Length: 250
Image (cartoon, rainbow, N blue to C red; front, side, top):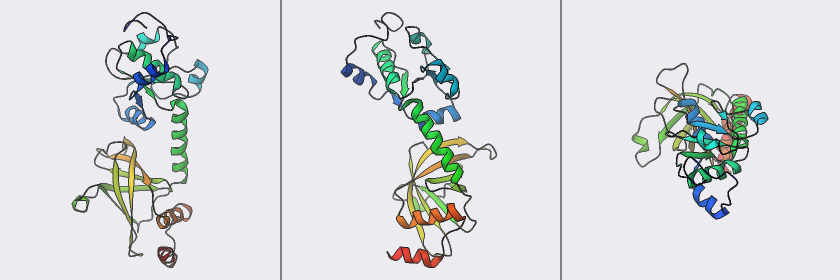
């Protein structure tokens, strides 16, 4: 490409180093894109995979775009455009060439549709194994920091639990990727499980106005906590107190 809207083609002789420099920082993650799609405003999503692959599965709101000189005209003059291919390689190179041509509002989906499908499958697997927590279990969710103990509980309602994380209803809108502190307590045990959690997705609640459904992923839970969560998922209840006490002494 020789200019922002004309010249060249996508088979330019751009070196690998030039491609990597131009594409540095130009990617978006699956979680970022999913949040934009679900909550808006969604970017323009250009899918450059073959038409047959696009027809089989695609990101909501995506449009098919052939890899040709005309692709540059599909990039909106304002607003973000996300280019999607199967594995993120072709789209990375396309975005690098667009940047070299002077277009700075295009990014590519890191990992491509393969990463999107994998993330969707992970979410479906978690939902399949998720359990509504027993009423006696309590969840406290707070922002990380020195004065976290003085801050209010961000969890309005604990929706479900799986071995990978939690689903909660919150009044605030945490940023995807932010880290929170979670404490799970069961009055019958006399002890609590503390763990960090990462915000993986946020979407507006369809039943509670002004609330958000937030997916949280555990960060390095203890062996004891993993055992208790597994019992919750498998049986719907926490393991007997004497078993928890025995594990705690190990």
